Image (cartoon, rainbow, N blue to C red; front, side, top):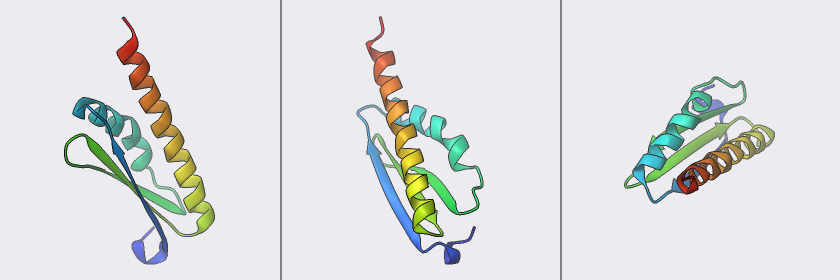
Length: 89
């Protein structure tokens, strides 16, 4: 999918306290972000400090909604898993 055919775009910035958690989150999401999907495309970028940016482009609003719901769910699950792992003895 090329940028010209992608009128919808969104950026999600995730800020965490620890750059290690940011790197772990990027590793968890990168296989999905690199996968080709017919109507949407995602890119991950490590930001300053402990932030991670997810950029999504989509051909239509339905594809954008689906991509955002999917990625936000994965982000939530990944961060909850990291928090649970930190609290384990």
